[in-house]
Image (cartoon, rainbow, N blue to C red):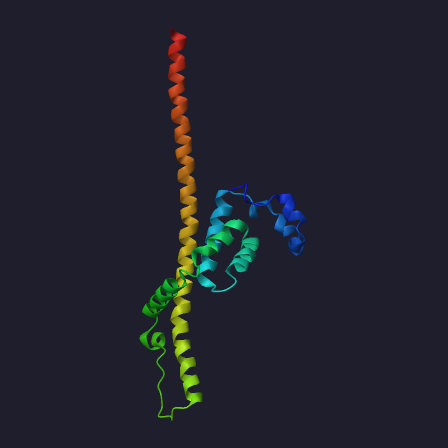
Length: 187
C-alpha cells in the first residue's frame, strides 16, 4: 500500500497543497500506524455516512485537524457511493422515524380547508420534505457515529490481534529453534 502513497517530497513540492502550510507535513497524516489508521477510518466512515456531498474534502479537513491518516480517511468515505445511497438513506429514514415521535417523524401537517393551488402545493411539498428531513438527518447521524465508533474500535482490535499473533508465531519459532540447538550441543 505504501507504494501507492505519494512521497513526502512530492507532497512538499505540490503547489496546490502549499496553502495548508506545515500542517500538511505532519508525519502522522501519512504514516500507516495503529492510531492514525483507526482515526482515518472513523473520520471517513463518519463523513461518508453523514455528509451527502463533498465527503472526501470534509474528511480530509477533519483528518488534518484530528491527525488521522489522510488517505485512509478519504478512502473510507467510499462506504457511501452511488450504489449504496438508496439503501443507506432508506435505512437512515426508517431508523430516524422509529426514534422520533410519530407526529414529528411523519411530517404530518394539519391542513386547513384551502383551495388547491400552486402555492399551496409548494407549501405542502416543503412540509413533506421537512417531515422526511428530520428522521433522515437523525438516522444518518446515528449511523455515522455508530460506524465511526465501530470502525475505530475494529481497526484497533484487528491491529492488536495481528500484533499478538505475529509475536506468538515468533515466540513459537524461537522456542522450536532453541531445543534443537540445545540437543545438538549435548551430543
